[in-house]
Length: 86
Image (cartoon, rainbow, N blue to C red):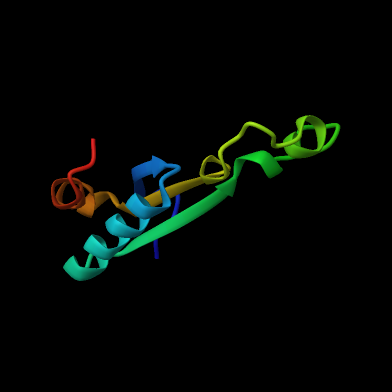
């Protein structure tokens, strides 16, 4: 089971297409992974959410979500090479 203590972040970004490509490579190679999706405009910041206070005008719809892929620390080097992430 992937946990905070035995995992390493492989990639963080806002590009859903790249996110899915990376997940496909990991699945094809049999590398266990976990992912997180974070709505950056829906974060609570004391007096309401960011979107509630400032609106979303001018913010590209694709940039509202931040994706993160985590893999086991022991698989990180292999996953890095296979996915060609920096």
